[in-house]
Length: 244
Image (cartoon, rainbow, N blue to C red; front, side, top):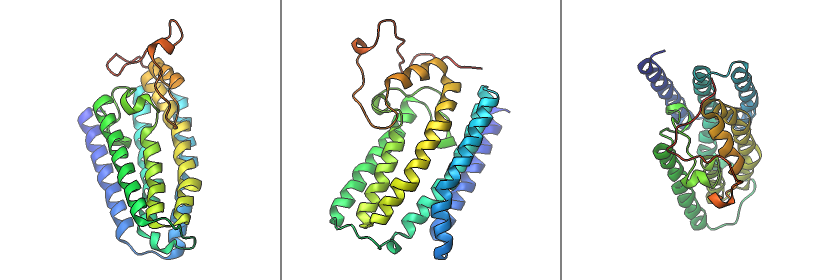
């Protein structure tokens, strides 16, 4: 498929998803329907992720990886994006367990984690030449700046933002939802699908980066002197090997 046609398909798909998210934000639903979305959405991530992984492993080509990633990323916008939108919209009904934390502290945490999340997007755009999810798949391996400390700074900051929102809302139930349902689903997506997809697209460069950088929790980047003798070194500007 020609690049222009592929780009137009992604734009149309993104526009459709944004319409669905707008509906999720502005529509009044029954408590039963909200519960189904908030619980069923994250749970439906697991079969989608494993199906995507099976498709990737069946034939490891660049074209298949790109389109499978587009489809799986789009499904995550529904299975996780819509529940997140509904959770934020309906948080006032989550007052079963109140967190007695001053709202000012929660708001400050939201500002800090929002800024950190925005920095990860900038980092990916400048060093990976890509955008979150399927909007623009990274053309280079982002392996420095924030990505030198953890392979998934965006996941980390999104989850931190979710917890911060729960603290700001003073809702222990919201925080539990983030930690018990949202976080495992998002981490499973990263571990099962996204890591395989990056292996296919970036080959040995990603495997080397993966071996020296933690998956989620940050760790000080290793210096060149800390690497074993003869170990390959990945930089953001070097050509990347690709498995066909």
